[in-house]
Image (cartoon, rainbow, N blue to C red; front, top):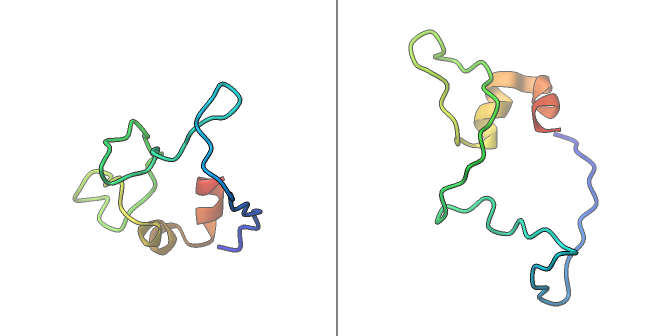
Amino acid sequence: MKIDRPINLSTEYIDATENYIDLRQTISPKVISSFEPKPYLQIFAGKFPFQSNLSVLDLLFNQGTQSISYIL
């Protein structure tokens, strides 16, 4: 997708404090998230409602070059 974002690896464990927002459990298969993705046109939209929480491949295959504007 050619998203140029810096990656900063941590060298130590940092507890969540008021100075940091802890997003480590935001996306986890073990935790039900309150994240509500914006619907986009999917291949079977005429037969089925929008299916959320699929993979980025679904987004890429359905939106193509427009995927970048969905993510950012």
